Image 1 (cartoon, rainbow, N blue to C red):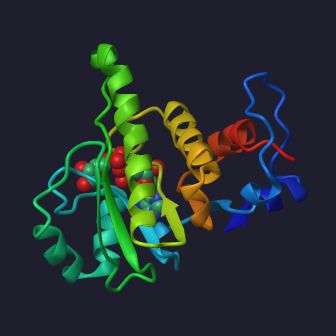
Image 2: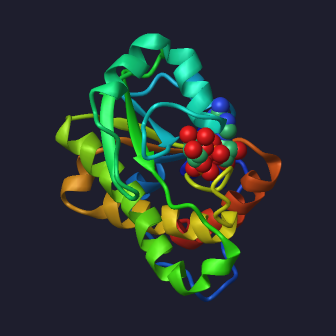
Image 3: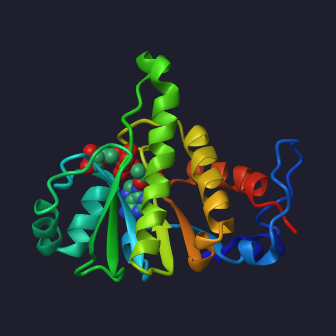
Amino acid sequence: VKTIAQMYKEGLLQAPRQARVKRAPKVELLERISLFQGDITKLRVDAIVNAANKSLLGGGGVDGAIHAAAGPKLLSECRELNGCLTGQSKITRGYDLPAAHVIHTVGPVYSFDSSSGAEAKAEQLASCYKTSLQLALENSLKSIAFPCVSTGIYGYPIEDATHIALGVARDFAESEEGSKLERIIFTIWTQRDKGVYEDLLPLYFPPV
Ligand code: AR6
């Protein structure tokens, strides 16, 4: 797991050339945001986020991996939650995971024929990140790791989704209450997604 500050130091991230760049953050902000390529179920953090569905009763993708690694007690606790609306999040314990908690968020299902609803879907995806971060704060958690919500089975284009994820994280991490969160980790699984994060991270977290 590398912080953005380290990635700049090691030349893994380049200063952005585009004009659409946010103003430079404080140094400490670059030390609180990290990128990790690998299996989110291996992370020892206060919470990992699950890209769940409305039933909260498990599924494929990262959801399947999290339930498999956490063991059956996670499903038992999820059964008590009565599902979750799209764009909302609910927290459980992590059971056999190294992570203490799982924050289950339900991303929007993206489809090409519903372009009129694109804005609503973008808001729902932003809400996944916001409500997850809010839950972390409410539970006094200090570290949280996100997968690329909605960009697998749910089909949300990775570039659009990454703009949303990074925009929400920047605003939140910089806010007064968000400063209590010591670590936000973006977990990527595929090489293609890694490239997208490396391209877009400097726009939202430019070097100081
Ligand atoms: N660690 C980190 N990231 C992973 C892992 C892993 N072990 N496995 C997959 N990914 P997806 P969605 C990445 O499809 O699009 C489930 O059935 C993957 O490469 O898991 O939100 C649920 O029950 C992608 O970048 O979630 C829902 O029905 C990201 O995780 C539906 O899928 C999310 O892909 C949710 O679809």
